[in-house]
Length: 197
Image (cartoon, rainbow, N blue to C red; front, side):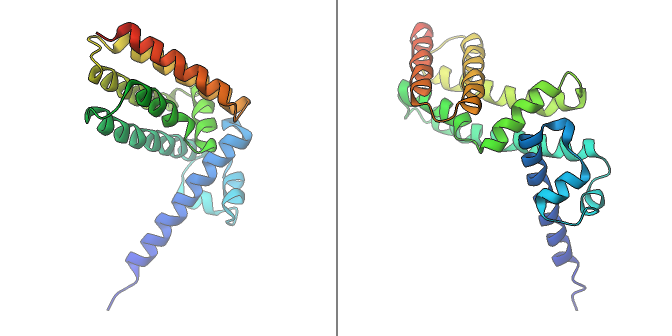
């Protein structure tokens, strides 16, 4: 006879995931410094004590939220790398794919990402997931650039990362401006052309 443990475990895992999603939303809405157990539980629609049942500290909640954002971005990067390695992308499609990689994120993820970037100076424990986000985007740019014949893609990949981050910040502040996206795409293809063989 089943003792119900697998079902309880699954429900617990689901509830923990909902709390992490709620923490990302709180970070996006209020900033990292305003994350509390109560704020996360309220956002998830759970009783106030729920967050402390699953997490031992507010820092652990924040780390789980930023790690989730990093994992989401890393997963999207893996998809882009697979397409770039297939050799089926044009340079314009590469630029669009890199833009979509960040612009296509859930807005809460984007805002939480940049909240974490800024918070690293005050919270060094966030450096690992933040650096993982940056490294994954940079790696995607490097691999994609290699497929277009760029011999040493490390410098242009860093340039692409800086451009994409700047675009994402502008998109957060002034969303839905197609001219910004066109300008970024144009600059990225110019950079690609300047380095391609």
